[in-house]
Image 1 (cartoon, helix red, strand yellow):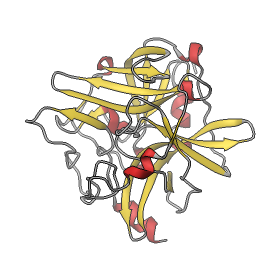
Image 2 (image 1 turned 90 degrees about the vertical axis):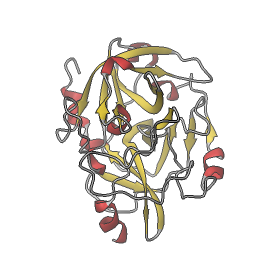
Image 3 (image 1 turned 60 degrees about the vertical axis):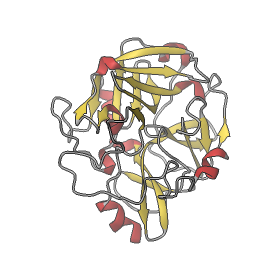
Image 4 (image 1 turned 180 degrees about the vertical axis):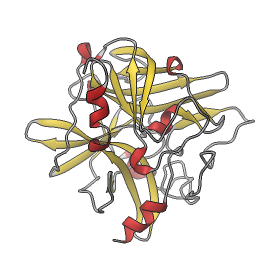
Length: 276
């Protein structure tokens, strides 16, 4: 398929963490120290083109949900605050003390360095400035392609996942979501989009995966910076399960597509964390 070839060469991770910096810093950065691929036509605020408003209507039309209600209370904001940088992504509790997010959300492309786990905070059920529970990170679990002790970011599209292990098991209080490797009739994406960073909204336009790319679900979710790390949820008779973690948007011959790392890429890592 056309998309298979295009997506195999496209890397846009690092573009979808919503970042505010001072005037001396420039973001989004072109990327990793060893970057070979970059898609330059996805710099718009809403992620669908260089026209700043392109795609924003689709973002604003997403359903705003009650972040304190199930199953949304297991979703929250992954926050980082440094001396001159504030950044947020989306994350999901997949165990009592484990948050699933995107690997690039834990990397500072402006500084070419991995964040310190203790400087990253997860707020479950975040909504309009408050949350149901909060905890700092204590360590990251990444794809074996990565090494958080270095300054490099090496992940390709199917490797852009991360597990943030928390100091406190807040999932025991607010709940957490199970992973699924099964296909579903419907998928939705939940996230804290940059144009509405204080409310959790849900994209219902993802559709079924439309390309065969190992480890990556290629869909049409309306997404933008801030949504990175958000859960792609499979909707079934028993409710919602995590089918993947949202990574990025790429351009291709048929327009744009959203990429999510399939749950099978990180399910063993979740199970392998001590105590799970």
